[in-house]
Amino acid sequence: MSLEYFDRLETRSPAEREEALFCALRKSLPEAMRAPAIARSLEGIDPQAIQDRNDLARLPLIRKSDLSELQAKHPPFGGLAPLSIGEYASIFASPGPIFEPIDHRPDPFRTARALFAAGIRKGELVHNAFSYHFTPAGAMLESGAHALGCAVFPAGPGQSEIQVQTIARLRPSAWTGTPSFLLILLEKAATMGEDASSLEHALVSGEALPESLRAAIAEYRVETAQCYATADVGLIAYEAPIPGAGAPAGMILDEGIIAEIVRPGTGDPVPEGEVGEVVVTVLDSKWPLVRLATGDLSAVLPGVSPCGRTNTRIRGWMGRADQTTKVKGMFVHPSQIAQVAARHREILKARLVVTRDNHLDTMTLHYESEHRDQGVDEAICASLRDICKLRGETLACEPGSLPNDGKVIEDARTDE
Image (tube, rainbow, N blue to C red; front, side):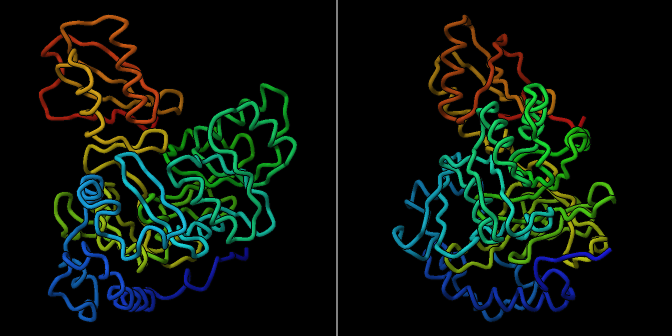
């Protein structure tokens, strides 16, 4: 069986890759240091002296959890952008809020590589069900599809019946979005008697892909691969399925970043195989995030992928190192739950519990209160939706009944 690759970068030797990555880092840092916050964090450091990962590990972290506050103090980008706001192509706003500038180059999020690995090829039509509103998810996959030479139907999420009808008429062969929504559309098509059989390949992200969900999608003859990406840094890692070989073993790091796995709460790299926080350095002088601590957990897998790509493999997203949690592809921050509680004097204490029901993320705000009624519940639900941009339920609790463990967000999802 002949395997295809997006470019020769994917099969170069580890030594060649490492040399090229750090050469690119040294080249990009002088321009990146035009950003005041980057210049301050690297004060006294000679970019040309950063020769390897040991040198990189001595640089300070930028914590994603701090970006919202940093940008509020130093608008619009927290001093992390070397260009003025008008020199960028687009500005996105992720929950927090966190503002992300994107420059004018093709495929700025580098997602074409992940689309190719998922089996999507030039000339195909991609049905893109990621959101185009505020957050960059829709643009991330659209720009990658265009760079690959594909046409895109910008569907966005929701309106499942219309989406099914569109798939039946336009006959796209590829699909991008969250895996739970893909299964909803496939099941909806079967219920409506519409033909969704044109779909062959899907690249999914934004939420967990347990094997039960992958298997449910496979029953509709759609081969699914997932990628791990963030609004801040773009593509981090991706799956590269081999037809007939089952689920891929781990996810392969993108060629345009330097990724580290560090002990949570520190910047110290952990040994191979140990779970730690994902730290990413983007080789991009226009939006130079140097050692961004993502708050995500993962671990390095030994060896190389059976597909022949030689870059490091990680186990994919394994949860959060902090309490910031991704729900339906959107990050929910502890500060947002505090904002909800501050709006309602009836709330004595609040705790957001995230679960999964039939492959769908659900969130319920447990709150202690001495005054509970339907009107209060409805008002709190409205605030939760307004602040987090997601729908959730509420559950009133007796004062003193919530755990005294400091948690504001509890992720109670399992892989079953």
